[in-house]
Length: 282
Image (cartoon, rainbow, N blue to C red):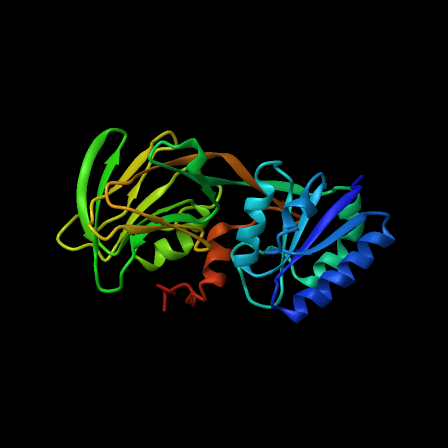
């Protein structure tokens, strides 16, 4: 039985806050201790400490933040969609209310997603983890950067580009896709390396083996920016190396439905119009 839960909400959405409070009342009626907090508040790490479930009310950006709060403990995470169709939020407000008893009994299944880990210049204090992607990009507008790419010790190329994206399967439908990268099924254990606006270089993405590592070395005079899930930015200087691999941590999403076709869901979320089958007998 679930004893304690943290409900995190989008900081600037009145609707998310109102529903989070209503959900907290519903949880308390089931005898569940509730901690309510803004997902970006300084108290959020303390709010999730020791709970059996983290609920995030908001959009995909809020869920990305909550995933990094949940990763150290491996606490299950439930994303609640507040109107916009997201890739990470699985249920709407009405469905949560319908599943209150299931939540109290912890009657759910877990879907694990891999994360990506970046180590800056081999410094263990500079280790970062993302659920979607980690990006090395230009610092100055209009000034491309030079990035040397080494995979498992093999030097692939030096890219003159706007940036390099290393995305998880979860993140393959985000920035990487917009840059021309492939879509990976979200439960796969691969990373995909995608250049952004590469000039006179290999412009295609590379899908890595699960055990592979990629090193990105910035050789531009004006440095670059390391971005984690598009939320945390770190300035890095010329000569800096960033080693990336699959993280030892996982995001453990709560699911109430049975697994459905990933491709059918993808078509809906990308608003792809699926035509009727061609009638070859006509």
